[in-house]
Image 1 (cartoon, one colour):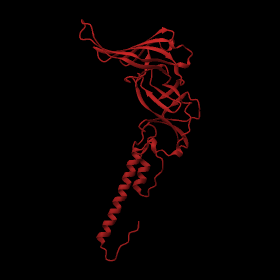
Image 2 (cartoon, rainbow, N blue to C red):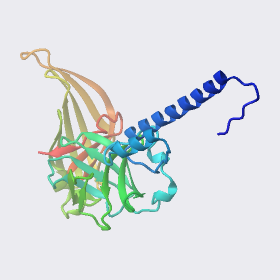
Image 3 (cartoon, rainbow, N blue to C red):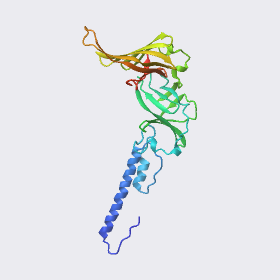
Image 4 (spheres, helix red, strand yellow):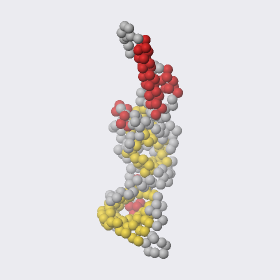
Length: 303
């Protein structure tokens, strides 16, 4: 910027202008430093002729795996040139478990790139989507797992394999996920529904008992303890149809309250028009409560 001075202009005025320009330059350098510290992946290299900015660029460590600036580096900020929007995620789809252990944390990835991550107890940890993006710093594609909010959840490299069986997260390769089931889960194992669904399933303080009555008819009894003295009981008559156990509107919810050990419990029927579906997600059971959706963030493990 070239500043012209009129004749007779005082030295004090020149000095004030120079100080103002210097303050602006210092503020710019300070903002550049904050951006480098908060962003986990740089999309461009910002050149600055000042010694302050050069020192920051040389000394600031930029993380690359688990954190991104939620204000400036989200999925929405990605340029379309670096994102493979036509990517087919069929090779990733299925049910993944840490080290192949079905009692460990797991991730379900669908063919359209949506994912749900679960804690070992079957409770949902995160939901989001997968994007295959070009990482300019290494000139290779990376799979980015974004939360629904657009924040980064995890990353793993694209090793070129279309049908993946292993995923190594982050820079150090941990955690290591192994795909144990395809998109069909236990539905692809050749067993009948009475073998796959029947039995006792649990998640936290909720227990589902499914029994087979014959000829495609099942029954589910769910006991969910709210405390040591109270619980909810769901009763569902079920029909097997197209890989699901379905209750079409005659399910019952009863609240049971124990006042003391000697007295019979108080039972209160909350409704008799409940509807639900039960499906197998990998080797776990999902209870889709169509009336109140009380178990949407849960997967039940077979005892």
